[in-house]
Length: 129
Length: 107
Picture 1 (cartoon, helix red, strand yellow):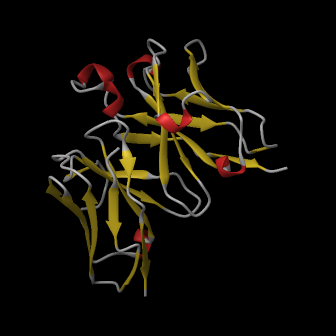
Picture 2 (tube, each protein chain N blue to C red; picture 1 turned 60 degrees about the vertical axis):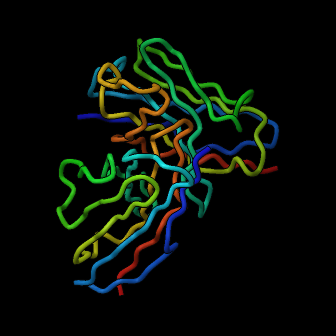
């Protein structure tokens, strides 16, 4: 059974950084892309970025370029999301999500492989002075 | 980026009604459209991919249709457990983008 378990809630001051972990299990870690999506309180879903766990190659939404970093540790099958220069409008629940289809079966532009079948439980990050 | 617009933003339905949620893309996205269900305090759940393909274990009262720029999620005879917010998502071009959501309540 696929599981994505995220780290807990965090409170940060403006200007600080936050690092969220997403521990995966129950499937071949290197075969499925992982995305990060966030949701501000009372708002919709916003795509942040994607990582190929096999190669470590990433792609980020333009608005997060320069302050978002997604990495992975293949030995622990964990993906990390690091967001820096936090602002109050970064207050949100952050989700990791797994693409259900192994990427070897995807023929299009890899960043658009985004059928998000399995999700972490979410990690609330509150940015407040 | 492709803009996804959902309507209505909220609706209230009675058991036995037919619920229709609309999603419009700012440009043609062929059939690259997914639907998610999100219950309060929970992560989204993938319901439908490629505009009309139900995920395993999704009840058959859910259906999706459409192509190009106009798509519809239909719930026939909604149940109490269908109270949730529903989001569409395009996977035609990067970055993937989501609609603003439609909140479904039961009377």
